[in-house]
Amino acid sequence: MKVWTIANQKGGVGKTTTTVALGGLLAAWGLRTCLIDVDPHGSLTSYFRYDPDSLEVSSYDLFRAVAEKRDPQPLKLIHETGCEGLDLIPASVALATLDRQSGRLAGMGRVIGRTVQALEGHYDHVLIDCPPVLGVLLINALAACSHLVVPVQTDFLAIKGLERLCHTLEMVARSRARPLDYTVVPTFFDQRTRASRDSLQILQRNHGAHLWDGVIPVDTRLREASRAGLPPAQFDPRARSVQAYSRLLESLLGQASAA
Image (cartoon, rainbow, N blue to C red; front, side, top):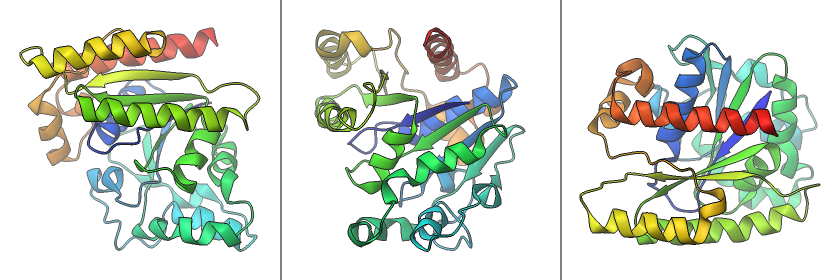
């Protein structure tokens, strides 16, 4: 089972869209996929029409069970997405309290890692959508994954978020047997704007070793897919953004096979 975390220490760069797009494609290609939302804002959860404010069970229960020394039983937290082969462990706003609690609760750093171990055999892929801030949730997701996908909007401020994440990866690497492999994915690319072109050149110059060789273009079909609550590939398989995400997924699967 492959575990991919989708993260950047800046919001609004396309993390949730990338999680849904890749997850929807994996399911369409016949690979059983589970999405885990550990962002207290619950954008991934809301995408599939669940309310993070009113859910009875969510990814927060994973942490609460560990704190109470109970079996988290993640399979009981699974929600349907309406897309065959694609499931969801949703988020709740209660996740926002974990950083205050984690200092006095043991075992909080490996909750998601133990969760994905429990999902082994039930899914081919697990994708984790993260908050854009450094804390127990992001550290959990980074520690649990086999590969990191870093969407970066092609503008200067988003690139600064990438730099912060690279510093975080250096810290996480000290607790792992080997460095975490990651792929930087340029998003919201608009060839017509100088800002996009210049930002892409900066990424190529400073992060070329980890930079995917394509781009995710600006595409209104992504917003329309979100409004419909459907993965982009299910909403419009011919959309140019879906074709771009398909090429990205082929690249990621190729890297996974070579690892």
